[in-house]
Image (cartoon, rainbow, N blue to C red; front, top):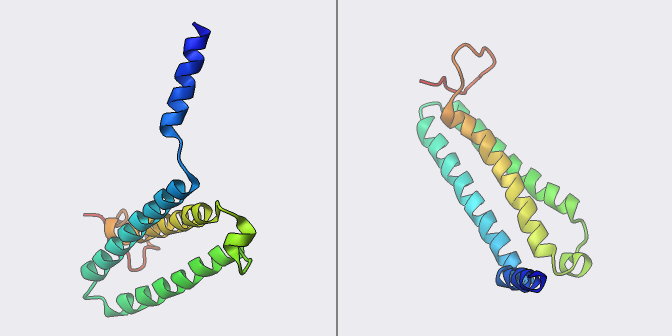
Length: 131
């Protein structure tokens, strides 16, 4: 019975094994999906707030600043010039995972402008109230 269990577990593990290249590709696709969502949310905010030209101008400024922050954050995490050589074959995987995490955090923050906040928040600034 134990031998069957060992054979089953071994076969199960083989069916889910991936190469480093496959893991790198999947992580990058996850980042692309997160980036696409970020851009969709950003474009929807621009559309929903198009009448507020001051806000739109400031949003564009902060988004450019966020991109610079994101890039600086990534380069602080992986500071070496020759990243592949220094961090090894897992570098593309790690880079994509961290990039995805930062992108999802930014998307969550931007969604507040789409979803709105409860009425009565005196510190909401340009964020619309929920209807």
